[in-house]
Length: 264
Ligand code: ADP
Ligand code: MG
Image 1 (cartoon, rainbow, N blue to C red):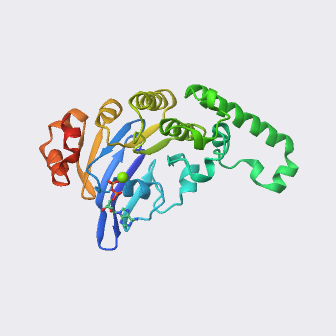
Image 2: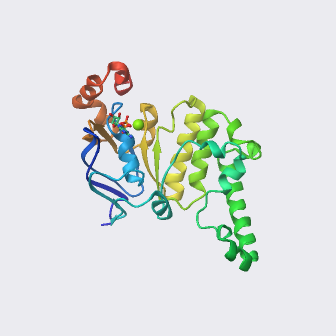
Image 3: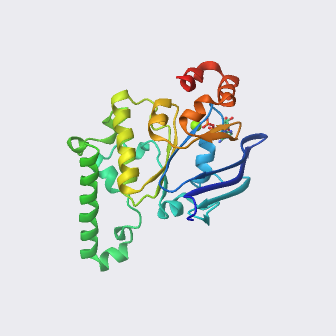
């Protein structure tokens, strides 16, 4: 039996006296699209940041493909194929869509000046390869017409597509998506979901997805893990989650605003 893609083992993370994540244990199976839901403040984003190496856990371990990677820096995890999408950072908004894709691949020879002097031909080959891949990603995401547009001028939904596109520039094995649907219109959300499905089915990407939009979770995710107060409350298919009284209570207890989404 192969190891799960991600295993979170007894992880806790406190901020001062606040236990944001509290003895949390869960697994993300290889090849799955696993959902992570729970009321605001449940600790979902903190857990993602621990997995992605942005925050060191107070306690516990993170295993990636069976190997202990607890506390490894994000760029090292990135090199191992784990990535977490972020909003397009400010400094990238003045770059074009195409440039945003082309800066992603790590370990380009061109970064090292001596190497670049010695290996000019090889760098040109690498750049051509990266460009070819970027064009392919633009085509898949239907962003081709916007290739020379500054990223800062894209709509919210187009920015999300570009974020997803950036993950497609690497040989990602597992991608963490934190509320990629936030502020995206229904049409684009459907497109994003389609791209996630294809990357999962055709390219073997594993996804771990935090999302408030329960329709999106229901469409994409199996299983769904519910977090509340820093730890796992339950997990199962979306149909099972919907029938679970404790889940409803967790949402109700933290503010009725989100209740309708679980029940719907
Ligand atoms: P979720 O993503 O499920 O909404 P978060 O992981 O963002 O939850 O937050 C969990 C708890 O940890 C919240 O009470 C939040 O206020 C707190 N928290 C998150 N990040 C920090 C931080 N950097 N410093 C202090 N408290 C934090
Ligand atoms: Mg969050």
